[in-house]
View (cartoon, rainbow, N blue to C red):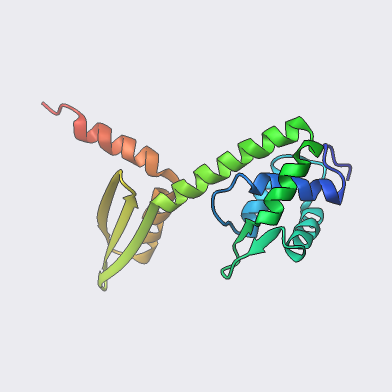
Length: 173
C-alpha cells in the first residue's frame, strides 16, 4: 500500500515523536503517542513508529515511567530543539494541533468520573461527576442500567449538563 505524507525515514519519525511529545505537559501511554503522531502525517505506519519509539527509549530520549507512561526526557527535548526544522512546516503545525487535541481530551476525560455503589440486591447508586461543574447521583436496579448511565455520561457529560441546565432554568408557570 502506498503511503502519502512527508515523513518517510526512521530519523524523521523520531524527530516527529520528539517534537509532538514535547508539547505534552504530562506522561502518556504509548497509544496516546501513536494517536498523536499518526494524526500528523500519513507517510508511515504503526510498526515504523513503534520501532523508532523503542530506539528513542533505548537512547534515553524518551523516559518510560513505572506505570507504562512515557514522557520526553531532557535529552529528547534538546534534540527536538536542534532538529525540529528538519520536519516540514505543515507536519510541525499538525503535531502542535494534535498535541493540543490530545491534552484537551485527556484533561476532559480526567475531569469526568463515574462510580457505582451497590446498596442492595436491586438498588445501585450511580455517581457521575464533571469536576468543578456538576455532579448527579441516580438509583438504578441493575448493573446493565448502571453501565449505560456511566457510558453515556462519560461520552456526553457536556451535553447532559446543557440539558439539565436548560430544564432547571426553564420557567414552568
